[in-house]
Every structure is written in structure tokens, then in C-alpha cells.
Length: 42
Image (cartoon, rainbow, N blue to C red; front, side):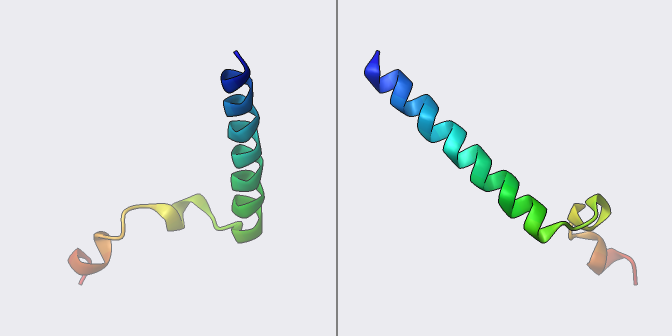
């Protein structure tokens, strides 16, 4: 059971870091859309 607890602790830590990174970058959702469009919109 200890392993499961450690896993969850690490998971939560990782999720917090991910959230912080997302807030730092703070880019609008539409900029995250597929990049393939650049080639086809000419």
C-alpha cells in the first residue's frame, strides 16, 4: 500500500507543476490547435 500512496503523491506533485507551467505560458486555446493548418492556408 505504501507504493500506491507514494505514486499518488508524485502524481499530484506532477499535476501541480503542470498547472503552474500552463499558467506561466498562458496562451489562448486557439493557439494550441493543430499546427498542420499553416501549410494548407496559403
